[in-house]
Length: 133
Image 1 (cartoon, rainbow, N blue to C red):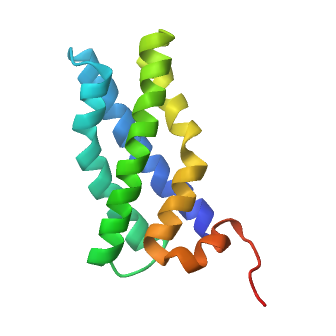
Image 2 (cartoon, helix red, strand yellow):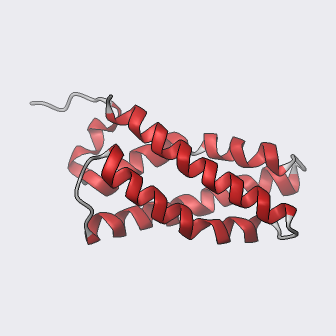
C-alpha cells in the first residue's frame, strides 16, 4: 500500500474521532467552535502517532512532532472557519457540516503532513511528482 492510502486511513480514523467528539460535545450543549477546540488535542496526538507509525513509517522525533503540530495549528483555523461558515452562518446541521469540512481540507493536510514528516525537500513527491534530475 502506498503512502496516500495509508494517509487516508489514518486521516479517516482522526476524522472519525474529531467528528464524534464534536457531535457529542455540541449535542451536550457546547458551541461548535468550543467543541472543536476541545477535540483538537486528542486528535493531534492520535494523528501524530498514526502518521509516524503507519503513514510515513518513520521514527517519531521532536522535530516532526513540532512540524506536525504547526501544520495542525495552521489547519485548525481553516477547518474551524469552514465549520463556522457551514454550521453557524449557513445553518447546516453539525452532522453534515463537520464531515463536509473534513473533506474540504484533506488534500492540503496531506501535503502539509508530508512536509512535517519528511521535510521540504521531498514535498514535491507528496503527490507522486518525479523530481529526479
